[in-house]
Image 1: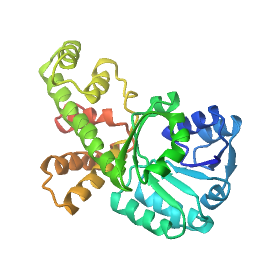
Image 2 (image 1 turned 30 degrees about the vertical axis):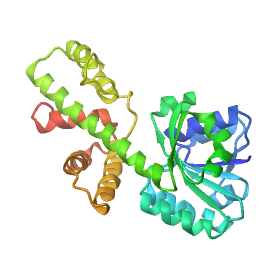
Image 3 (image 1 turned 45 degrees about the horizontal axis):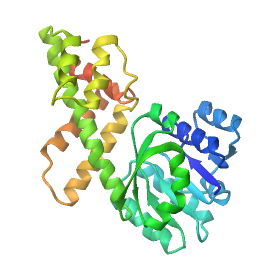
Length: 294
C-alpha cells in the first residue's frame, strides 16, 4: 500500500517516520516548516506540492492537519484531493474535526468510489515518534481492517468507535476531559502557589489518590522546573477543540455548562496572547489574572 501524508508537523513527523520504518512508501506535501519534511525525505519519502499529487501517488492518504477548515481545503480546495479521486482510494483523517463535516465529506466521496474514514489521535508528539499513539477509528470495519497495517505502524492502541464520524465524536469527548483537566489543574496549581504550598508535596499527594490525572502530572512540571514540554499542544488548538465540542453539544442538544466554561477560559488565554504557547502555560494565564505575574 502506497501511503500519502498531508500535515507533517509535530505529530505528522512521527507518523511518517514510523510508516517509513515499517517499509511502506511515503509521499508527503511541502510544509511551511522544512525541518520535519527534510527529515522524512532523507529517510526515503517523496515530496509533492499539492494534495492532488499526493492522492495520485497513494492508495491511502492520511490527513494530519489542524482542523475542519484545513481538512475541507485539502479535499475541496484548488489542486485538492477532490481533483484526483478514483475508485478504491482511502482517506484517513487523523485531525480533530467537526463530526458533521466528516459525515458530509464521507458521503460526498463515497458517491465517487472513495472511502473517507476518521482516525483521530490521542497522546503527544513523544508517542508519535515512538509509534505509540492511540487511535479512534470511524468507518466500515472492512476499510479499517484494510488500512490497519499502516495504522499499526504509529499506534499501539486502536479503538473502533463505529460509523464514520463516531471517532471524531469520541475524540471531542476525550479532548474535553483532557483539556478540562488541564484548566482545573492550572487553577489548583495557581491557588497552591499563592498559598505557598510545597509543590513536591502537592504533586505526591495528588498523584497518589483519586485526584490524579495525566494532565496534572504533566502540568505540575511548570512550577517544579518551568518545563512545559510534557504537553506540547498549543492553547489555540485547545480552544479550537473545545469550540468543536460545544458545537457538538449544542447540536444534540445537551446543556454543557463546564464545556462552555472551559472553552471560554482558552479563548481568554488566546486573547491575552498565549495562543501559540503550550497548554501548561494556562498556569501563567491563571497567575496573570490573579496578579501573580506581569
